[in-house]
Amino acid sequence: LEPAECSAISVPRHQQVLPDMKTLLFVDVDGILNVAVRDPGCAPAVFSDENLKLARQMVGQGNPLADRISAVADRNIAAFQEEGTYEKFVSDPGSLCDLLVGRLARLIEAKGRCSRIILASFWRRPQHVERRRLLESRRQLKQRQQQQEQQPAVMQEQAEPQSLGCAPATVPMLPVLPDMETLLFVDVDGVLNVAVRDPGCDPAAFSDDNLKLARKLAGQGKPLADRISAVADRSLVAFREAGSYERFLTDDGDLSDLLVGRLAHLIEAAGHCSRIILASFWRRPQHVERRRLLESRLTAHLGRPFSFDDYTSFREETGAACRISTIGDYIEDYCQRQQGSHKRKLRVLVVDDFGVTALRGLTCEGKTPIDSVVDAERYLLSRAGDGTGVLVRIIHAFEEFTDENGMQVSIGCGLRLDHLNRALQFLGKGSPLNETLIEDEFSKEHEDVKCCGIWANSRITPFFSRFIRGSVRRQPDQVEVLSWSGD
Image (cartoon, rainbow, N blue to C red; front, side):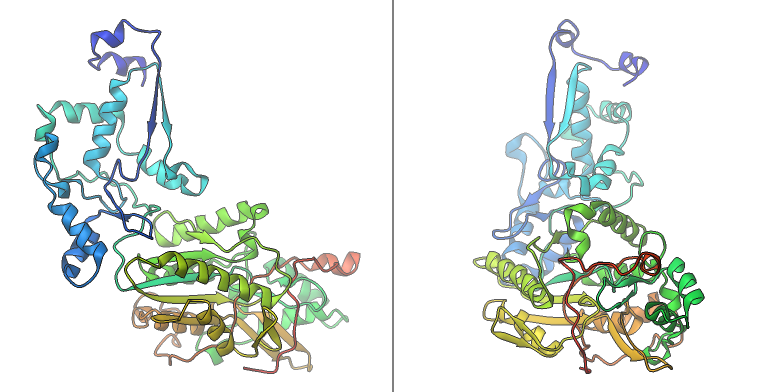
């Protein structure tokens, strides 16, 4: 506070005469500035108005978490020298209870100037910077103090929070979990951009700079330039989408904003009871800035702070089969951690181009052959225990075609509209697409057809240096490129 502000605050005399006293105030958020309901085997559930309404509807239907939340709402707090029930602490869309935030503000004012306020919550982590800013924006301390002074006692505090006009935030606690949970595994290269396969090298970025250079080099004996030009001219009409792949050109961040927007739509469709898991090469620590860029783009499209809920392991991956196994490891571990808690159905949705590679001739763990998307789905299903109540869908953002000169072209084709529709239909959200993503006359009814694909990620690089300095050496973690004959 500024000196002028401090002079307007009534401070107890004993604090004024002890200037040599310092205070360290450690603050948590979840369970302090909101009510957190324990759900054995899962993260605590947020005690929000939306969750309470859903819990009321599910009471007595064999959902223990719903019963717990209802019991918390009805719990009288008179024994704690306070009127009403815990329902007065229901949180707002930002997962903060304004009444409790106001009490923290009073505590901060009471500790005096010679103090340090230290955030010890999960919200302190870098990926939750937007959540922290939301909390910090909840009124200036002086305004909070004036609000509280208008109330003669804590017993008379209003249970209904006043809207502060802050953007909602996603907190690291799960909402009421209905009968269906969703694990959404997301790749970046080849899904949120187009990746052009360059045999013997990393896939090339389909960027505006690369396309301009490819146009100049087309027909000069540069196969990659010819491939990039062919991709740009490739029509999307066959996939019920207007235009050509040129509409998916990336910006400086190696992301297509159109495709990022489609992923945001998919995340929204997955609902609150979901985990968004990054399994791309971007998940690795050396690419933290790229990951933050992607999260900021998704935040803009979603209209709320976003960060990935989790990542697949950083185990060394030597090829496509190893990547499939990595996904299987995550599913197996997740299902084992759910044992002993309320049994819920599980949807597993994987969106990936598999390193610009088709499913053929793979073997997982040295014993499970993978020759189709169905094989891959069955393998992932086998990693989910007995597989009861588990659904698996793989969306493969991959296309292979032959250009007019007879050259074979393979691409990670991005989250095309047909892929998005299939994913939405798997999530049971097929109809909202026509209302929210009217991009062309082809975004109409789509059949729920299994699409070719399998889990993977890859690293794409600019290609123009290859023409100047020679070929780029293959990196150790580059996904092996396999032949493809259709799926």
